[in-house]
Image (tube, rainbow, N blue to C red):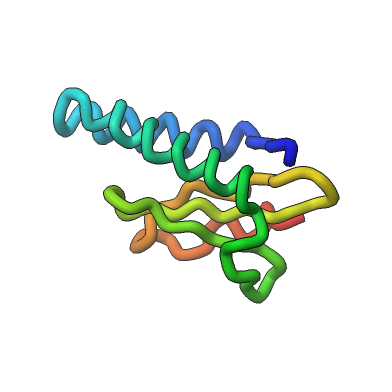
Length: 97
């Protein structure tokens, strides 16, 4: 499967990583690694996560309180958000294709 990561999602990841890095050196890198690991898993197993109302899927991170929302369009996984699980729920809803 191909992967599409819109600029808004790239910004979310970068901002969260910068926040964690400022909190404790090395924590931002750990965040990047976990996001990268989950994205690779999604790309390899795109249909495993439950389809939710609104035609998207969601995978939680294990260590950080974030989740990755994504949609499958043809042969492409489109990341919709890397969002904090407790802040501004579904603020990204208008990004759904």
